[in-house]
Image: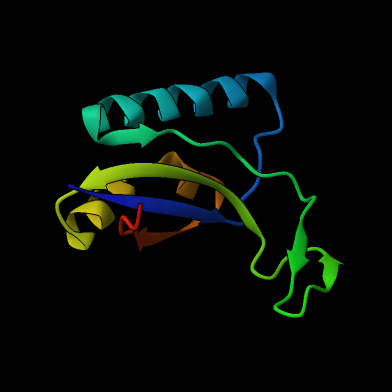
Amino acid sequence: MTDYVLLYGGGSMPETEAAQADVMKAWDSWFSTLGPALKDGGNPFTPMARRIAADGTVSDGAPGAASGYSIIQADSLDEATEMAKGCPVVQGGASITVYETFAVM
């Protein structure tokens, strides 16, 4: 099994408490369907970010506006992508990029 990072980009937060509760139920349901393949449910990101360039220059903000992440385990990129399709983040207008990781340590 390989780890895959699901990087969420964009989207919006629900405005009412009832809508927020519905979204949390959707996340709980999706997490349940993933079972032991869910390694880290992740968290959303705030807009606060810093970028460090190769020359050490630090600037505020980051390209791409990532909005959160999760980490799952799967046997292939195709399988991880299929699993990611059920993520409720897309209901809020976000996109998902699936990254395959590899162990170096």
